[in-house]
Image (tube, rainbow, N blue to C red; front, top):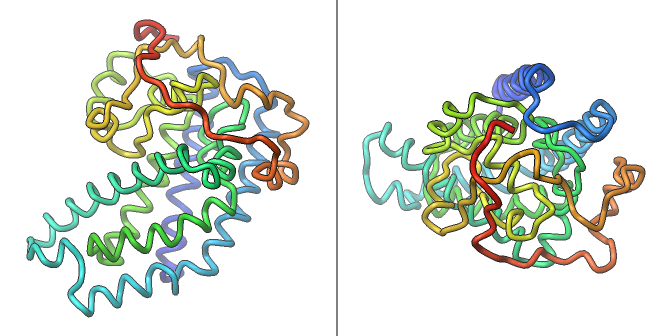
Length: 279
C-alpha cells in the first residue's frame, strides 16, 4: 500500500468522522449520556493502537497473498472471467457478505466475542465508536481478510477501494445522526443506517444479535436477523452488566476481553418493540 493510498484512506476517514461528529451534534438521534469528548479521545486511541498493529502485518499477511493469488489466477472472480467493472462490483458484494459472516462469528464464538465486546461496551454510540475496536480483534480479523481476498479473487486496488468505502460506511452507521425518517426508511432498503445499527448496540440480547450488516442490509434480510421498529429513545446502548464509565477508559478497555464471565449474548428472534418513530 503506497503512502498516497494511505493518505487518501486516512483523509476520507478523518473527513467523514469530522462531518458526522458535527452533524450528530446538530441533529442527535439518541440522547447523549456520557462525556462525548472523553469517549472520542478513548476511541481515537483505539484507532491509533489497533490501526498501527494491523499496519505492521497487513502487507505480508493480506496484500502478499492477494498478489500471489492474482499471479496464479486463483479465486472465484478470476475463474468467472467477468469484465473488470462486473468483477469489481461482485467483489464489493462478496466482501460485504463474508464480512457479515465474520461479524456474526464475533457474536457467536466466545473467544471472538471477548474482544468484540470491547466495541459494544461503549455507553453511547456515535461516529467515533466505529474506531473502537480492540487491537486483538483487529489482529484476529487479518487471517480472515486474507481468506476473503484469496478465495474471492479480489485485486488489491479493488480491496483498498472497498476498505475505504467500508471505513466511511462504518462511521456513518455508527453515528448518532438523526436523518429524516422517510429518507432513512428508503436508504435502509439497500444500506445500513444509524437507526438500524443503533438497535445492534442495544443491551437487549435479541437486538444486539441482529443487524450485522456493514454496507448492505440484504444479508440480514436473507438470514432473518434484520430488526427494525425499535424506537431509538427506548434503546440503552452498551452491555447491561458494564455501566460504570470509569472502568471504560483506554487502559481498562484494553484488558476488558479478560473479564471473568464475559460470554456471548443469547440469540433470539421476534424482539421488535414498536414502530419506527422519529426518536
